[in-house]
Length: 318
Image (cartoon, rainbow, N blue to C red; front, side, top):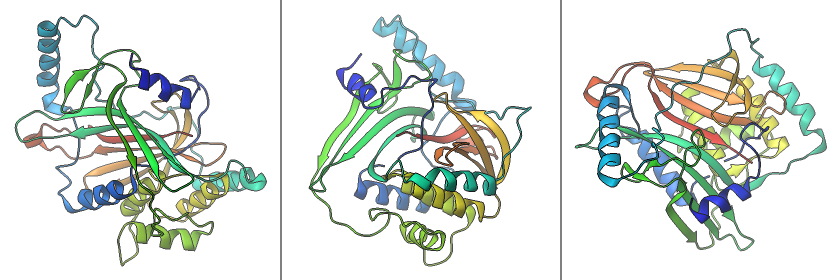
């Protein structure tokens, strides 16, 4: 296993089944450009996998194993949609926001710029079947406003097994995809500037982070929240403010309790948008956002995508 993966694990020395808390970024420039690109390109062309291409992917993996002599079965990355526990009781966002407010009374933990996030993102190309790539990313900021970013290919559901990485080739668990250091940046535009602790100001902040001159709809708001969490690890007060903002947002339906892909217990809230279903997972005790899953609700057969396929999933950690 790569040394870098061990360093990554030490940065978050918690077993898979232990409680975690929300977090999140990308590099400041790349994240803003990626968000803009994702909004400008058609929804059928995001980074993604599975569906009708599953058989082709499995066949490709088998071939790779045969010709490379690899004897350890790879971890096929495409996750199934998360399932809510049938006997669980949904908790309203208002109740969750009240809990978050109580938790934030002592002011800990504090806001921190930087991220630790695990993602599964579906990727497409013109000449290959779509595949889902699992990545773990750590971004840490320094006192002089420079920052470092480490990205490795790893799937915590199958520790130690080869995974799909980069251009879809099989790589060792913990294979370094990129390691970069960025010079100081003094941008004061959202999401680089610290998020405010007031719902009206936070809503305006997210609108600016989304490069929008008009109020965001629920889907756009969730995208902006993801951008925020990909830049900042929220403190208790910021998480409480975000929970209150989400409680005042239309279209987010509480659906019950689940266990996320990192083994954490969460409350799920669903927004049904055009062609896609977004599921927001929040810590039931602190109101912190743990993850965001987007699944297709409409098939895209020309791209090998079926209704119910997971388009993307991000799990933010502290």
